[in-house]
Length: 262
Image (cartoon, rainbow, N blue to C red):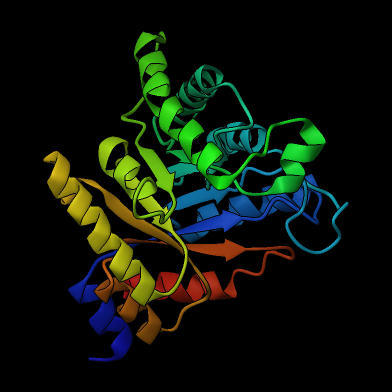
């Protein structure tokens, strides 16, 4: 039995992709999400920013939620969502309404990805208060119950279960918010760091009386070998999210999909 087969048979996992909506044309972006959908990914994501994060700082860039509405109608991939939407960019009640509409468009495939935000240029150029990290985390904490209340009031509401994904690794506040509110968790870092944070999350679940198995473990990861996939699975990862940037070459993604399907 080769290494590819050994990994996938012992631990099933999902493979998603964050498509970087920058330094490209809208047609190139559309071709990219259609291609990844055809390849059989488990999820498609876009980041929620207003300017490129690298390369030409004033290059082409497209808005996350507009893209998600298009992807909802243009794909069959199991899940779509923002990775992640910044809580400070939009009124939380409006966010809840946007999310349920996209979920309806997708037929119940939307994941409501949320985070505290970090890219200062977005805040400065669009007139939002950047503050300090603790201010942005506090806003997320205050907004989560409000978002849930608004979703309950909306008609027709979500088409599916519309899980909440929270991205972050802060051990005192962010991971507690994940334990209290989320069905999915996302983080960045090494496999070793992820394993540690995952144990901290388990601890918060135990404190509030929640089964930690209810929270799907996702992470943004680089291109991976079969050995690296195994290391991440050992760390508790269930859902790999790879990056796909212009010119949207899918070779690395296809390699990981092959490992998944072996």
